[in-house]
Image 1 (cartoon, rainbow, N blue to C red):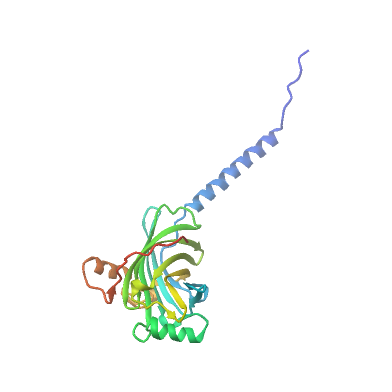
Image 2: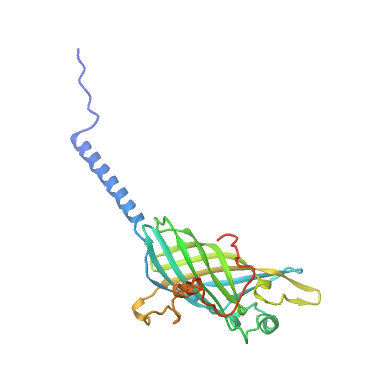
Length: 254
């Protein structure tokens, strides 16, 4: 006797299976397209209340922390080729806004070490490049530029962790700055002796700005664009201030 062939499903089951498979393919294609969307390229302005710059000075008694109470800055992000991006950065901190939370120590720091009457601003101008950025999530970018501190210009090179948001992006980095390279007297007081390296941690949030609200040829701080200044330096034009001897400060990771 021949046994009847058993069917594993009805035509309705087959149709539902096909529809489910097509839906899965559609979802996968949507995710692939979304992940391949380019990052926003426009003007961004630094948001001080959502950012922080802190520093740690170690000494033979442990050390002390400090932070910047004020800051301003901007970034111009552009797509260079494919999924490669470049940004011009400009960040400034009033030197007198640096505080350790102790008035007596702050007064000594401003008067005898940072000399805020002669050097009222700490400024960083530079560029960052990120290649093969295909996902709107965290990625590492190399940052290089010039730090103006205590009247001395020093070259910096460090990696930064970039976190995109719908209305901007956040950049985080940690690097070592040596006081001796910028002509800053190392703090000493009786048995207290500070170490030369200062650990600086930055966590900066930049929010979307409107380029048409800016004067032509100007950046968010009202100065000439960072890229133009960088090209002037490459062409041999003498920059203001002295030059730090060490050249490059390396980060210890984002």
